[in-house]
Image (tube, rainbow, N blue to C red):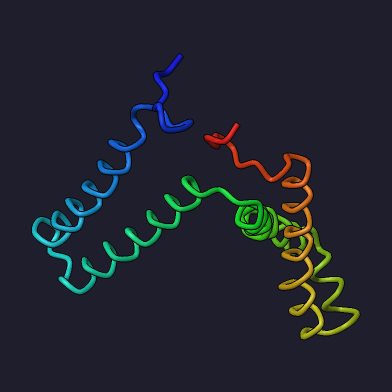
Length: 140
């Protein structure tokens, strides 16, 4: 069993992990600039965006809430599941059939809305079944 912090349910490696992630991001920004000759503005923007994403993920892990977890499950449904449904729509021939019978614009509207909406509902359904607990979450 891993040693648990006295303050809560965080393991001993929790704080060093986040420090290491932030430091490695900054070091990779310098490596991009000095070794790979990436323009300085691109390196700074990349480091800033990466640190913003790290901050969001830290917030999600440190202050878990039902609303944020539900939004993440819906986002999970929209991105990979909705995209997979969109691929199925395009490859299965349904898109051609809709284009042939209804026209190009309805096919585009249906193709770019329905799969992602269905993906959002599927993601919410998965979250509801898991009681909106994130995988590998520290909450009990």
